[in-house]
Image 1 (cartoon, rainbow, N blue to C red):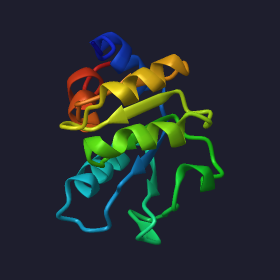
Image 2 (cartoon, helix red, strand yellow):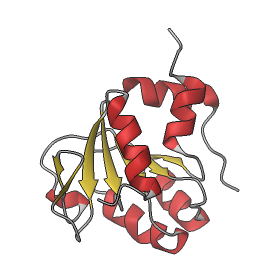
Image 3 (cartoon, rainbow, N blue to C red):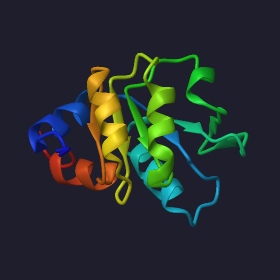
Image 4 (spheres, rainbow, N blue to C red):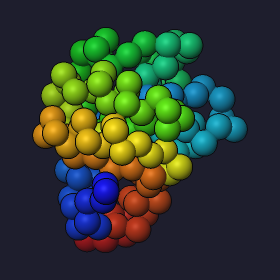
Length: 140
């Protein structure tokens, strides 16, 4: 049974990360993905949108998939349905990115098993913004 990393590990990941590739980032301000990405951007992270249906959002060029991104990124943050998670993890495995983060409500044992077997850190069913607020923001 999958278990998320400890609060200390999550805090360490968030403190060391600088760039987040956001899969499923919408250009609609009323969508959760937009609000979370915008907030993380305001907290100092560079956001790289990954969505084949848009060209840009939050001042950043959008990419169709992870393979198109030419700059390094530290976290892959996923706003897609749980059923899509195994395919997204398969796409993420060949990348240099070590952390795959599925937002709150997104969970797949199959995806977690693949990620962990490939040496990636998997976080599931957790909101990156909430975890940042709990473990990083306001702490020295």
